[in-house]
Image (cartoon, protein in one colour):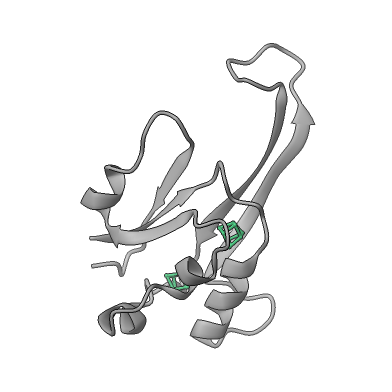
Length: 117
Ligand code: SF4
Ligand code: SF4
């Protein structure tokens, strides 16, 4: 099964993936194949096991429209979101391979879709 792995430690919230995906899928403004969520900012009121008391991250999430760029990948190209990401924090591939990148030194999220084969 194919998936999208995001190292959200390094996501800058630039939204380039959203725009590239929208163009790829021919979606209208306000529609998304991938949507970047913003969590924070806030400062925790109690101690947390972290190197900072502040929370502020961006997390890309796949929507139902994502088809894992099947046509592009079949041609040997990267998915549009991965190609557009200036932070190089999106990876596409077999989930078994992607899982191997997930170390304990950074923050990752692995995403799949119903149609991902
Ligand atoms: S893999 Fe393709 S369809 Fe899926 S979010 Fe990325 S650009 Fe959009
Ligand atoms: S293009 Fe990359 S850095 Fe920019 S919002 Fe998307 S995942 Fe984050």
